[in-house]
Image: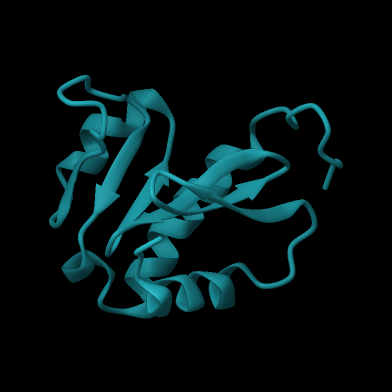
Length: 116
């Protein structure tokens, strides 16, 4: 599995020891899940951010973002990729991780996961 291990370490540091947080191999990279719901992940060297579908267009107006499209042309609302230049500072990474965490925290736990 080829993904940016340094970015993964930065995300782990940002997330800390949070109840209900797990890691899972997904999308050829790694995903961070809160109570079974993905909040952020890494695909190669880009950050995958899960957010409310209605917030997708606004998020895509930010520099260094693009639509998350691994399916060959099908647009996935509620999922974006942030390119490495958009993650250069801890504050920038924290912003995107916070958006993903906030969204996942508002979802019901997936079956088989413990409540936070």
